[in-house]
Length: 226
Picture 1 (cartoon, helix red, strand yellow):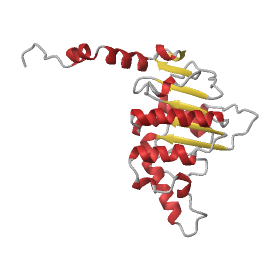
Picture 2 (cartoon, rainbow, N blue to C red):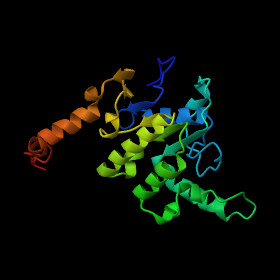
Picture 3 (cartoon, helix red, strand yellow):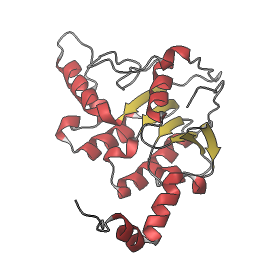
Picture 4 (cartoon, helix red, strand yellow):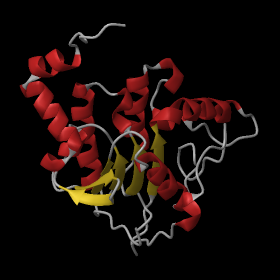
């Protein structure tokens, strides 16, 4: 995906990365986060724990070009390792030699005492303070469609509070955020595309408009002998 890539520009507010499973978008978003100083497993720049080192070396070949305006907040969310973040927060809060507890920054209830989706939204609602850089890998993973709409509203609040987002997603709902840049990963590399030209939008629209036709083809009995 990045073989022929020299530079990659980001929208000052919201940039999406989309692509098929295995296309490399999560690897790229992880490398961007590490290059910008975030922990590879997620969290703010203050997190330094490691459960299992599995990130690629791509971050070594990335040189971030920062705005002259300094971000005052930031976070890297990896949907697959958010459980580890919750555990690390609990461990830090229990450490008698540590500083003030950080758990309250994520809401009144511990993350592990909430559902997966509630814990995600506790992060968006409480920990994201605005005026920051937020790099998110599949934030829709734990969110219902209704919660994804709520996330769009929260994202817009943070954009109005001078925040920038770089998001890898499969959600046609999140991709609908207006005026965002969308990069689609393919065998050709990364291409800027319009919302309606993404595979995510087209497949979802076609399925909803012709559900029975899709099901008839996908679930048809094979006419062959075993």
